[in-house]
Length: 309
Image 1 (tube, rainbow, N blue to C red):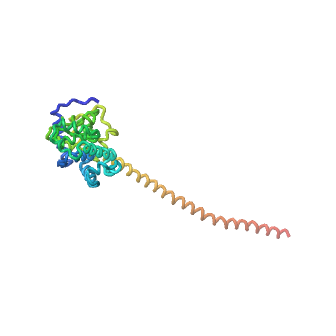
Image 2: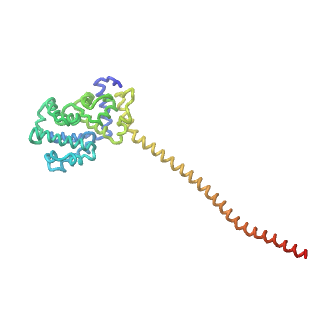
Image 3: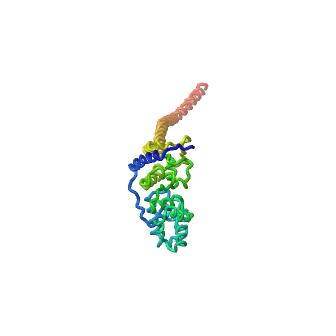
């Protein structure tokens, strides 16, 4: 699929309309990302492919469930993954959490990365890239929160939602998605757009619409200019509601068939029982009649023998 070339100004105009529409459906209040640098990284691991609310719950459970960061560092993967049971990829998240803490402790002999705030974007990016288990989303989210960099962090769910809207081409990778998305919004709008895009991508009611494996994009491509109207149409009639309507129709038809079957059975049953009753009544009547014919036949024989004498 060849993506249509759209100017930067047109992209930004479309994104303004998307932001206005998304603000009506979701809260425009930005989450508070005021944690230390290291905790920001750990929280980003919790945040990937889930909502801010769930990420906060999981992160708080992680800190409350262990004595300190050092205890988390020396814990086993199986012990840590219990914390992530509700957000998926539990083992992978637990492994990254522990790996990050081990890396920082081995390099700094403490759990402090606040010096990252004083570095340039290029320097900070190089330092974070040394942590091999950091995904593009965790890296870009940390740079956006800590340094205020002009980025739109993208995880797998945001990637699919952005492709559905036409903000990204179908063959866009997760490694390049953040840089491509940032061109669609101004730097001042990037944090709000990132937040609203996450709300859209993690909306459970719209999960079926953004499942590109089951509902692939059209072969002719997606026109970004139509994104606002397409999104409004999806809000009004998502695939999840369409499936429920089909199920309800099937359930409504089923009782009508059973009723007709039941009425037919009820009509047939009395007819058979009446016939059965008639047969039962006829049987005792035949028995005495048979006896009478037998006696009448015997009497004339006796009378004829007496006449001969």
